[in-house]
Length: 232
Image 1 (cartoon, rainbow, N blue to C red):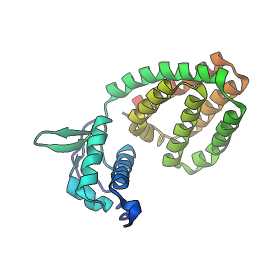
Image 2: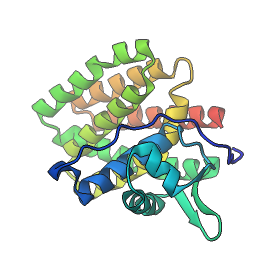
Image 3: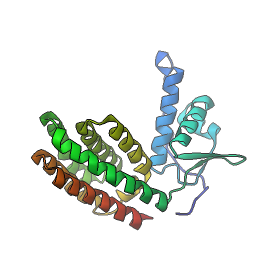
Image 4: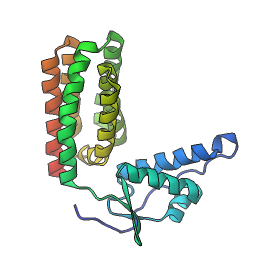
């Protein structure tokens, strides 16, 4: 995908309220969360140049929390801070996401196998509750809500696997792929495929069948890989 440095039109966030809740730590978190959301949703376009002062005005924040947020996002690979060029939203790379998908596929397979033998009844019920919301979100084509639900579902599986190292790794891999996920969810029919794939994973977990759970998870990730290739 070609990089673009054209200005990006985005919504202006409300100014933070004054008082004890507007401390430095909260402002840093607010700047980080809002800039990250806009990058993931491609409101700040891949390859776009970012100016700390303009971002601060856009978000209703000072330059210090914005500066700190950008350095944190650089560590996560969402922006690059370049000498004499400033801050740039990291361009989308098909090769990079395919490499990440390979790593994710292996670890998601392990995670869902562990979850199939360790998941508790209450966790299964909570996952079923999440998936019960999918039809309405698919019908409404609510991409941000679909992204949030997908992350919640995969996070619930990771929690059920009861391996903190694995859960942390998968959380970081999901974050690295979030922008690609946003693009593919706009593809006609993808939301319905996700609903079916998540249902197959949960059915296998409810049967406590590690082999079926792994097969369903790999099918889900393979579909994501194909959707990414089409999108880019």
